[in-house]
Length: 106
Image (tube, one colour):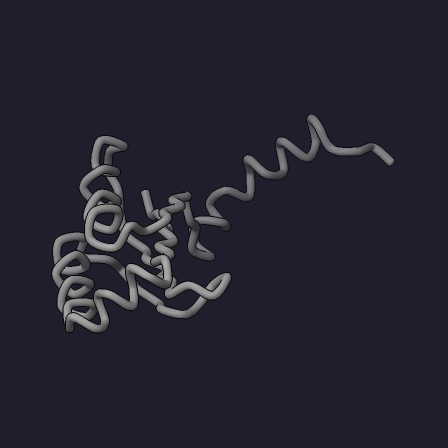
C-alpha cells in the first residue's frame, strides 16, 4: 500500500545536524533504506519537513521507516495511506456505493 509519511524535524535537532554536517548524509542514508517512490522537502509550522511516499506491504514495516527519523532527528512523524489518480478511479465503485447507502438524500 502506498503511504505518505510526513517527517517534521524540530529546529534545534535540525540545526545541530546541519552544524555538524550530518543532516544531508543521514537523510540520504535513511531514504536509501526506505527506497521511496518520491520525496519532497519544505517547511511546515517553522520546521524542516519532508513528505515521503513509499510502499508498505505490511504494518510491521512501520518501525523500520519511522524509527530512524525518531532516533536521528527527534522527528515528529505522521503516516497515512495515499492514493494515485488510478487508485481513486479504482475506488469509485466503493465511493458510489457508500454515497448511495449513507449519503444525504437531500
